[in-house]
Length: 324
Ligand SMILES: [Mn+2]
Image (cartoon, rainbow, N blue to C red):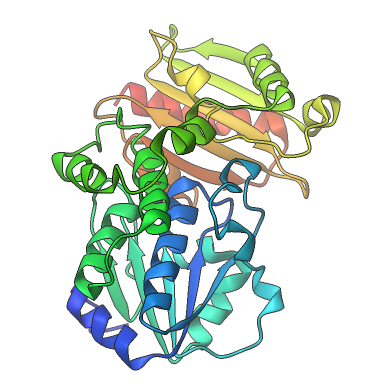
């Protein structure tokens, strides 16, 4: 489509002012940045007397249930209204909205707020910058809207920024991300939130990690690691609220490993792949070749093939990347 370009926060503010019913959408398998950013913006818009509805195709992990408004996030199939404005948050491409995609394009106006380098600017309004997190962009939007920060928005934004920066340890931990976070501390119960996010895990999820580590092997003289969870592993572990988010780290944290892959078999067949890399090794570009995307050092994609074929495909792509 011709004429697509970046817009500014004040362009988005103008559209928000005109709208009264606003739909907020985040991506499938939402992470802390997705949930936190969406809820923070929802609270801010409600202060402007906007009616907001938050939707997400897929389950909100138990880990984020402590966020005050997490229970208000709806499934897209429960919505049949047409909104004045739909805002996609943290969605690297429009397919990441899952079944909420049609609601996005049915709205009278739409906006795309995201920080993934692979984002295709699929919105009419695009606020896409390669910053630490979508939470950082929402922080700036809230500043632009002038609605101020309160305990709930601060807790949501902290959740967003801290989870996407690996609790302020990844290379996307910028001065700006830390300065914004500094403004949030003191507005909410920081240690309680950090406990939920970083110091609590169910026994079941602990067993799931053990299973995945059991299924870990090294390749390419230890420079690549691959671990997996098949349906049979998942059934055996019998986990009610599985948390797959951090599992790949157990592979990437091995001292010799430069590229780590975590394969997870999906209910309806096929595999979800999560990749991590160090330094200049770009796994976002690798994943883009298979219809996925993400960030240079953290990306994902899906493959619909039998296990051995998926494993061979990804290992040869990783080998190519390591030897490029
Ligand atoms: Mn994000």
